[in-house]
Length: 140
Image (cartoon, rainbow, N blue to C red; front, side, top):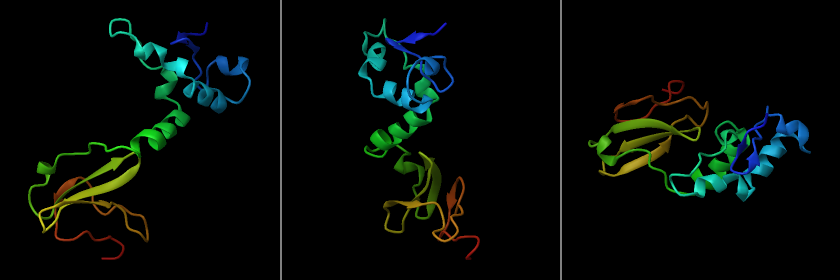
């Protein structure tokens, strides 16, 4: 039995719907992803509202579209400035797969840098702490 969510048959990559609809599993999920009726249930009044269709949480295509159309086009909250109050204080995070270092500079401002060596791609720091400089373990 196929489950229906917001008026669209579930279309995750392993669902039975993929065998009954034309196109590859990826194109089926992508077609549903851009079909506005796929999300009708989330726009209902709170007491009647539904969650996103299950494939939204497991689809690689949906994730890539979220990254491209949402996360890379808006400001995202990745931490508070008071987390690094002193010059040299830093913390490292990953945001949509991109490693980032936030550090309080000697100028008192918060700066963000890529947390990888340009040459070898290794992580420069993990977690949080305080340092005078970020140094690649391969380059000293």
